[in-house]
Image 1: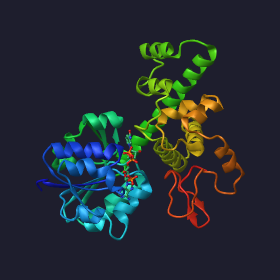
Image 2: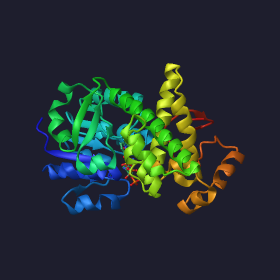
Image 3: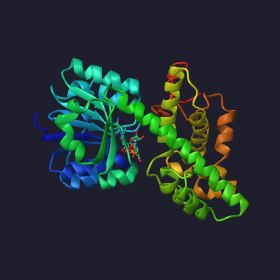
Length: 341
Ligand code: NAP
């Protein structure tokens, strides 16, 4: 099938940029996002608006999704008016969200029954990679299977890794995320030690960059931490979700991931005290005086309130429609919480 019409669901930090490259490549693009304002730039550039994922997908040859959490992915694909039913026969369904490997397998299988092609395709490279169109794609399918949509993937990526089976892309992405989380803790520890010792922390970063103590995280995120720039490229609550998913998988495999366990505790704490929508580099605030945290918008008393409460402790209000981190799928009475507790 020649790909002409493309639908894109989820035009947040990453999705809006990726969709922009697809538009630039000349495809006919229809977009849907929960909050329409976040699609306005794309609409001004010629994309069409749809009022639901089903409407967006109705005549699309290829549908991308880049939403937040596994619960969002499940809703968009598997609900009664979800993509599995709504997309046309023979259509391609590509999930770019960092999500659950098992959910990716379920979606692949459900699509196959309906004569559609679905594969998981989480990305790495951050907001800058999305802006530049140089993302790395981590694909849960074979190179041959993906060939019909490759030209579209190439419009926003520089490298593609094939993990050959449904869910394989998500599993590989979670491996990347647990490494990222430990790298972030590594540079946060280093900066705290430097600052408390009264030596130049920026120069310590230079030392790390010139040896093996540095990482991609210390190169790109640590300078932001030092400058007090906590704007999100990658949301803290999304990294908590990813670590939660990795820990869920580690439990299934009956293995221990000590770095991920510690990272989950720290990022969960950051989210509980008001840092959910900050960039992951706000991790270093946990090492700072309370006054510095307050100035940055954090409130440690929220943590105490959570501790005193009789809830599950994941730091979320589970009333109404609100979903939490999307990581662990533990039962909490009749509410299914997804936290790591
Ligand atoms: P984001 O800015 O929160 O974007 C997610 C978008 O999806 C939001 O605009 C949200 O709508 C929309 N959405 C959620 N559920 C929806 C639904 N059911 N129907 C329609 N739209 C829905 O987050 P992001 O940074 O782009 O990240 C997206 C995913 O990519 C996450 O899984 C994240 O872990 C992963 N990721 C992020 C980065 C990064 O550097 N940012 C890098 C690699 C991977 P609203 O506008 O209403 O919230």
